[in-house]
Length: 347
Image (cartoon, rainbow, N blue to C red):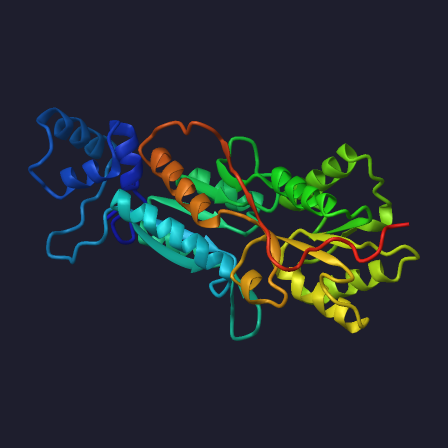
């Protein structure tokens, strides 16, 4: 009931913010509930009248009064599943409803179509969580013009100033992964990152560089590789590393999604993980446990990040100022079977 069908009036979240109350409290006033203090009811009613909020006729079936949208890059990825779990849990505690949609869908002609703005506007969403999508400047403006609060989860690139986001401590995770390999005795350690402009991968590579520098180890430029996050891309880049005159004895991969391609390249040369080369990933997706050998990786708390983002969004919906524009949650190294001391002492 955040917006009457076909209306361009204010959302219930805007009413709540103007009245200085929570969205559920504003909803109680709109629906004629009795469990609201008289002064609060008077204040909300004044705002409803001043902003021209259109109440839905009583004969219509009621709609949820506090809907938030979760817009993800893909509906069939392990990342999205973890994010949905965390967001749904936090929303249940807050008495909110979550609607999930993909950022882009393919039309019959095969073209990508972005229908989430129209859908969340029609639903009368009180706020939006975005995960793993790139928002264009026009989309930021669209949200701001309609005063729809939103929070980014694990953004791939730096958001504009003032845009709230929740991410993992990428630098800390990259450093922990590299220190683990150094502690096993590796000295020739390479890193595979995603697209060079991805801020999260940049943080992970920066952590790798910091650990190498702290150990007094050189980082040859040939040991730092970037590219698209895919099995094929990782397989190709790993092949390039193995073709070097002094190939690395270990590699830190900035995304678990690339690890199958790394394994394929190693096996294609008649080598084995970790006997000939150790591998550390980042994310701790479900595949990290069932891939062979089981992957040593940095656990990224995706569910916890989604929960924190939902709680930040709730504060924005009620007109509060978030404690921090950017929140970082700690990562944790999960040691499994893909790492071991180097087979031979490095040259």
